[in-house]
Amino acid sequence: MPSPSRGVLLILLLAAPQAIRAQKTDSTRPVPADSNAALNLFLDCRAPGCDFNFLRTELTWVNYVRDRTAAQVHVIATALGTGSGGLEVKLAFIGEQQFIGVDNEVKYITQRGASSDELRQEFTRVLKLGLVQYMLGTQLGKHLAVSYLAPPNSAPAQHERDPWNFWVFSIGLNGSVGGESQSSGRSGSGSVYASRTTAAWKFRANANGSTSRNSYKLDDTTTFIARSHSYSGGSVLVRSINDHLSFGGGFGVSSSTTNNLDLALRVAPTVEYDFFKYDQYTRKRLVLSYSIGLDRYHYTDTTIYNRTRETRADNQLSLSYATTQPWGGANAGITGSSYLSDFAQNRLSVSTSLSLRVTRGLSLSYSLSYSRVRDQLSLAKSAASDAEILLRLRQLATSYTYGGSFSLSYTFGSLFNNVVNPRFGF
Image: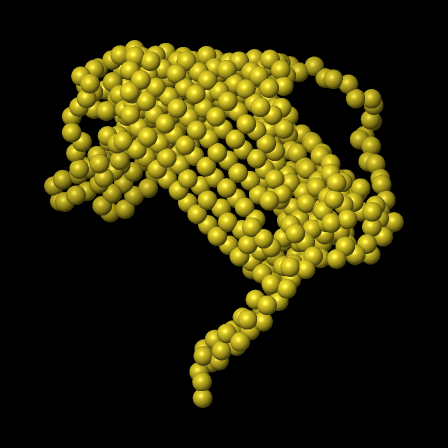
């Protein structure tokens, strides 16, 4: 008599071909557009406020489908930061099946410091309003009603005087400590941020730093102590010229034990051109930028070029593209930089990423990056110890860096499930 585990395995093997055949049939046959059924909604959310359990509880007159090919309405939600520290959230409504060509876009602003509940409440409210035009195209549209909740003591809206004149500030501190019998460590970091944003001008300034101390007991008489710090700050001022062009200038300062830098300064004017209009930035952008900078370096130890300090001029050119579409999203960029005193001292970096919905239930994503490195001016002349290499306390000579990731997923089964069941936390 077969064991229970073998019996379960046999059932799964027998059921798998049926499930695959059912999935194939389902993926090749479009979902019928039944005007008497609830609206099929596919939500592609890249903005705060997307609490799907909350949506299923508060917005019950739609079917939430897990694949965009089954949807009658596809909603893409994206967000960008505002000058006050809040967010501008954009909901793009894309009609499918009988609603092809019926597209719309809705924007709203969230306030800085809004709670998670406030974010999801506002997201749900605006999503409901955007779906009204599609619901009116179904038989269920006759059940819709519009109401207006007037604020208390409401009066015609007026522009209030801003006592901060569009300035926003932020300060943050954090620290950590931990250890065990053979090692211990502590670290701390802090940041300061200020900004002012108007339609014509944009200013940002920030400073942040971190320091750490880690102790490792190698034997009864030897303890290795690793100390490191990294401090940086900078500011940028940007002037908007038109819907495509901007000019700006930036200043930066940094210090890093890992990079053998007591002090690094950079001043650089920059020009930027977006081939698409800036108001399309959350959906698509193709940005070309160029800068010329003046750099001043003070090194902790003598470098491989026998320098303890030096001044250099550089230039940098970059082109980047990004898009968010119903089929997914893609990003690509290339950046080249060199020192003007020696063009052989340069760096070329390329990166690309893709998130693609191949077909119903099947999606893939990847990210790749590569840099050809020829500009490591700050490398220390002295050799790095084994501990510094293993703990990555020193920057090492290299001619390239790379990174990448890949994922593939396939989901099949029920397309429709509006039930919320939070038991056991999942």
